[in-house]
Length: 112
Image (tube, rainbow, N blue to C red):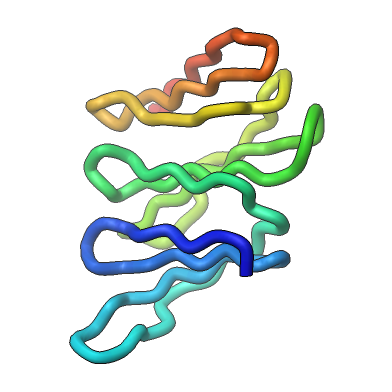
């Protein structure tokens, strides 16, 4: 297990070496809810509304970003930025994803 991240709406995401798992937080326990096959996730970022999550996996030029809709439990899109992403964040309306690269450039990806 590498990464534990809280999700809005009383949920929790655990990142393992070969997958990420979504759990619902119940009154006295955690209930397994969904699973996505993503290897070596290094960063998980949630949108402002909590319905989208962006996961960065891979290293260097081979790193990729996957966006998952947590309400429908589907992968919205995946893409490979030009350089190593250092920071990822959504805008206030959750329709753009900003990626700050290691060469100090900012890429904007529209989620339409």
